[in-house]
Length: 178
Image 1 (cartoon, one colour):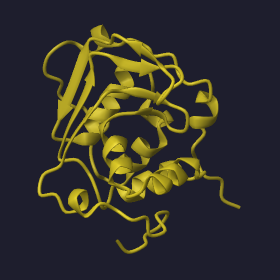
Image 2 (image 1 turned 60 degrees about the horizontal axis):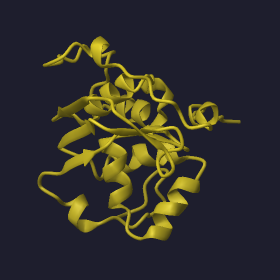
Image 3 (image 1 turned 90 degrees about the horizontal axis):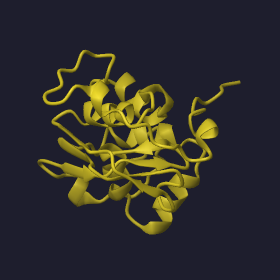
Image 4 (image 1 turned 135 degrees about the vertical axis):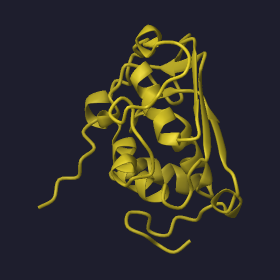
């Protein structure tokens, strides 16, 4: 993959980058660096070849911007966020299970992930990579874009997750320009 803004030539899985139809199935989790994860981040990080590259990606101060840039190259065509049981608190590794009791699926990955964030008690504006992906026009965001929800009323499904202790820092994702 040729380097692009914020990506710096990260090696991508050809299988994922060239897939004719890409499905992401993920559990919702709180996250130390990006507030929460769902189907999009699941695919984007999985598409980066090599553990060292994925680890370096998480350590970077521009993770939200890099994820948004990666989304232009690898993006799920269908997403399932299985919140039957999610992870809260010390996610994505040391969190505790939470029985959310909902599942979200969509052919619009951003709609699925922003709805999942909402059901977890987060604003998609706090999740920088979701906000940036929406600003790039790669999908619609819940609740801003009037997405039709089939099934239960969203208000009946909200179960606020305990955020990672780094939540205040993780939601301060905007890069300050000099």
